[in-house]
Amino acid sequence: MSLFKKSPWVLHYNCSSCNGCDIEVLAALTPMYDLERFGIINTGNPKHADVLLLTGGVNAQNMDVVRSLYAQMPDPKVVVGIGICALSGGIFAPCYNIHGGAATAVPVDIYVPGCAARPESIIDGVIQALDILQQKADAMRGRRRPAALAEEAA
Amino acid sequence: MDMTGIAGAAAFLIGAPVAGGLLAGIDRIVTARMQGRKGPPLLQPFYDVGKLLQKSRLVVHPHQGLYIWGFLVFLLIAGALFFSGGDLLLSIFALAVAGVFLALGAFSVNTPYSHIGAERELLQMMAYEPMLIIAVLGLYQSTGSFLVRDIVASGRPILAELPGVFLGFLFILTIKLRKSPFDLSSSHHGHQEVVKGVTTDFAGPDLALIEIAHWYENILLLGFTYLFFVPLHPALGIALAGATYLLEVFVDNTHARLRWQHTVKLSWWTGATLGLANLAILDLLR
Image (cartoon, rainbow over the protein chains, first blue to last red):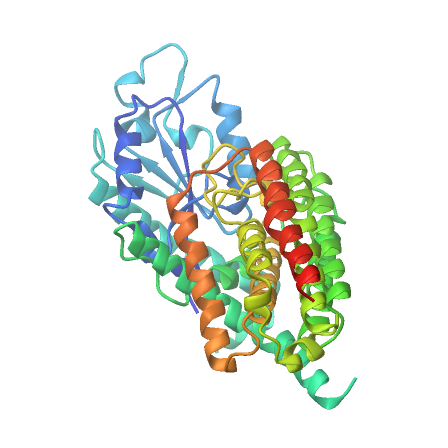
């Protein structure tokens, strides 16, 4: 049963975005798009989250924050980088304090393009991330019960 | 304990998670419709708990889970006592112990949000316990017994004799069901001021246990609500108890959260006026 696909709880963190992508993320979470239809809940708490949505490039001050949030999420978990800044730092990349995209802090599974990313493409990105989440969950189950994995392979 | 008692307790232990989960699903759909949304599937609470059980167990310290088991086990005891037709007083005392375990679990971790949640959980208990005791005393005054099986068999017009106690009970039911305006200890949405309050530092399987315990708790509370509708046909009584839950959902969606000072003050005043006055008048009429 792919329960992870049916109940993804997301955590949203703004690294050092211009707020453009964040407004689009929040737009996707509002009653207008009603993401609860898919069981998606905005948790605001890393310990309850399965999907970490990151916007903006990582700077010297929030590097540790992003890493801490990621570390506090129980496995399996996926990270979605939203917007061009989460990919490379975007127009902020040359700034003295910007390390680069979200991947400079934590491993990113899916990038959503755009400046700002559209709500539809954010939803699409999260849905694609859920496939990876399910793969990670399956791999985890395999680690816990090697016999079950061998059975599937046979 | 006779056979029906054992059957009642077993029905609660096995059936309450199913009924409680479905109730939570209905709650979420009705809430969504009230907000002009479609809402999740009916079985969403089961998907959530199933997923949480599959997550890795991330704890701050090893005995964190012990408190959650304490919360669940005492809820099971409270519910089994109630549905086996046992002592209502013992049942609500076990319920109080369960609540204390949840607060202890929340106090045992380091998050300030969790601590605020635990303090508010205790304040909420302070707020609702007097009225809960008054409700039990009212049922005793009306039927002459603390035993659930005697209360159910009494056939007394309980609601007609205890209208004030029933209204007071409805008031604290909102606190017990963790609905707005009294969802102080564990805000319904995690992105608000106390994050998730008491459950902030519980992840994966531990959070799943808390959810399951809440399902048990909600069914037990609906059972308690049913006692007020006892002389009616059981199906009608259960329907009315269900309608009470929908009323609570409506209140949840139409009220903003109160501060703890107002919560304690309002609940005590409700208990002191509606509850005690009802008991006094009933005593004078006898």
